[in-house]
Image 1 (tube, rainbow, N blue to C red):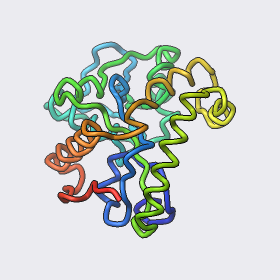
Image 2 (image 1 turned 90 degrees about the horizontal axis):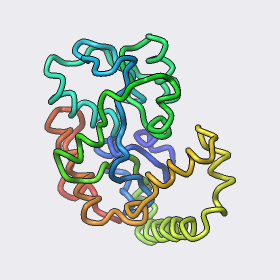
Image 3 (image 1 turned 120 degrees about the vertical axis):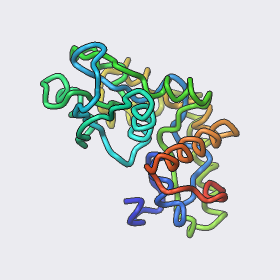
Length: 236
């Protein structure tokens, strides 16, 4: 939808930014970045070798996929095999049932994969943080530049206010959260929120912007995304 310009405001993976920043502005708040919250590679057997193996991923236009390819370029020199794209909630059952050799998982799957009898082969976030020292950039809020500076600034202010209100009164948004949660266990939902809604959600800051540009610059060097222009991340 972002690449077709269908919506004025939407959430996207940071991996989509190089394709849409001519038309959309990256908002400096509302996104998901952090530490210890990266995608995982899961397998049926501990310590599996992914050389030539089939790997399920939620999307090839995702931060998870970029982090996976950067990790694999270093750790799997022989190269992985076929990449299979499927909805993220189908990945763990597919690995468990032997339909694919490994799966790249996101979101609540960080907490629920042991229920499927799966093993964590690698944490893409740990690899990213170890090699860069930067937080992990996952999801971003973008809005059309054509909305104008006043509207864009007002939107960012409203998002910051919403985040802070939710921190102050977490019970207020809980019914809405649970209505839309993929994992309905309230304890898992609380873990998810605690991990992904943090200081970077209220404002990217210097480290947040460095993480976004660092990821996309490294991905561009591997030929995974187009290169960013020098002012691509400007707001508004």
